[in-house]
Image 1 (cartoon, one colour):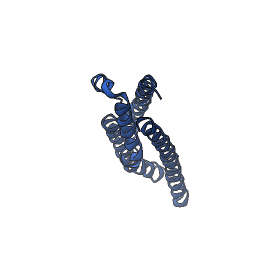
Image 2 (spheres, helix red, strand yellow; image 1 turned 60 degrees about the vertical axis):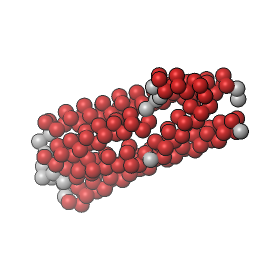
Image 3 (cartoon, one colour; image 1 turned 45 degrees about the vertical axis):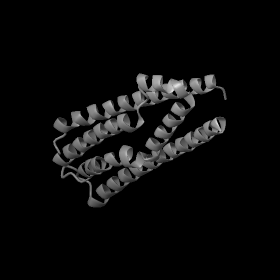
Image 4 (cartoon, one colour; image 1 turned 90 degrees about the vertical axis):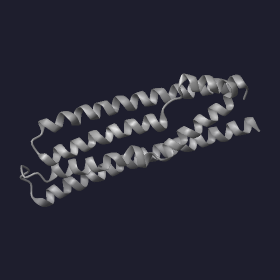
Length: 175
């Protein structure tokens, strides 16, 4: 791999990170808008608290995404031009570490809000269903949430493997 190839790979990687983050921010804004709208709209206090916790979780995820997974700034890229291989490797490692810890900063912040929200919806006094049916709805919702989180964690683990392979390939070029 030539220096020009490394430079091209670095630029494409930064572009993919920017695109990924923009999609994440738009999705978070949608979640925030929807659940913020629910807080004054839904009369159940437990559901309101759950919606508020989900909003706070989404805001935390946005902050951590910026902190851990943002694309490099123009000044960082310009500084990296002196050694594109070292710059690109550092960015690959930084993104890999962000993806490796996705459980703690991307998924876990939603758990309290989702569970409180789901409990509020399932066990509200306005729900005429018997307790067994309410419990079934709660457990099915929690199971669906757990399955969705497991898929997200698996996808991120696959991305970590790809980044590890790219880091190893770049290390072979530098050696």
